[in-house]
Length: 188
Image (cartoon, rainbow, N blue to C red; front, side, top):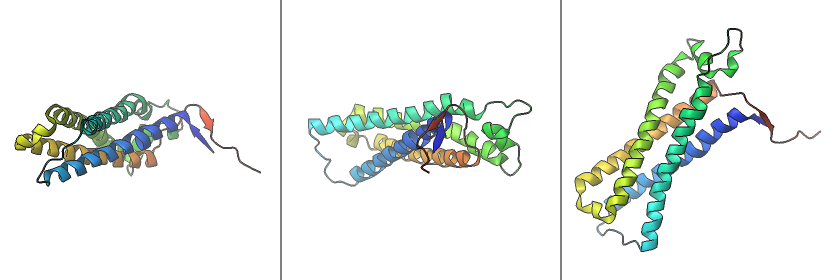
């Protein structure tokens, strides 16, 4: 069993940072919905507030890792320009564009993925900053609370779209190349 270094980085980008970000944002959606329907706001201890701040900051940081590794490491490999005689299997963008049946994965999938992923992480960073700044006092600002809830839901939906397109793009035209790493030796 083996994997190339580029495939490994792509998997870390999507399956570690991307999926974990999606799970963390979903946790924020659930907590914000739960807190909206309580008659008494929860009285967190100082340790609880500290853990809540850590969760919010950690969510934003994981999101930034996902977006930055995708934009500055994986994406340049994706859009590498092949030489005239090259096998397109190692050039995902060119491979997708080479057939009318897969060209849509680039023109719709990658174009959406590129932009919507940035929106997701910017929205969640904004929400985290507002929630940290206002803390419990956000209950006294219902319009701001609704706006934060909206941004968190939009961030979750955006991250889902980016993740879905990322998975489908990697299925149709995986990023390959780099050093091959042997994970397990075949037993005979």
